[in-house]
Image (cartoon, rainbow, N blue to C red; front, side, top):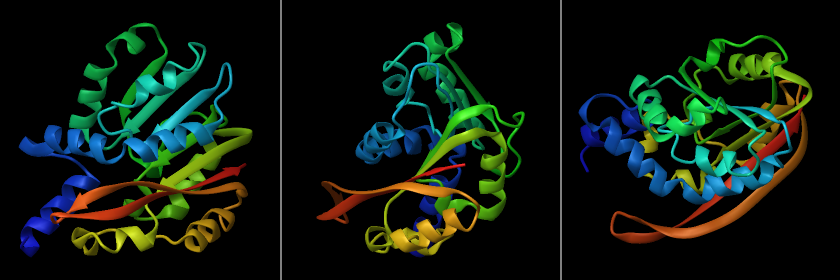
Length: 217
């Protein structure tokens, strides 16, 4: 791929827009299945949990979360208007029942009252946070006392094989992510690394993995 194509891919992964946005969302669903499943398992969802996802994309995986217990309340926010619209279409029944809410929002300024959520999580978005310190402070603000944050990424050892990451991606080792979270007042309670099935990249199978950190306010 030429550099302009790689730059365009990186931009769409950051914020799907325009005529290809829906297709990008669908491709992300395919590539992110296992990291989402690993994240949901690590959340340890409990009866009555009020949870927030930052960067839910088209909301394809929300049904998995909400099928665990119908007392769980889910809020998803994304700064791609098209992804929010698609999430509404994907989850009409959960919206109607009052179990799910989706809105366009910037993670730097979350539109929620302090101490609203039991758990906040984000999958494959922290690469794009211009100021992780600001976002983590916002997450701290909206979490209840003893609330938990879960951040899931592809580790740097995986990401550095993707040619588009040179355009706007901040990559993390386990140590990088741990340091970032602990330096912003959270107490790390779990670090999980899991290999995933190999994926095709440039015509070849390549390794991929989940790295996630769960921490407490």
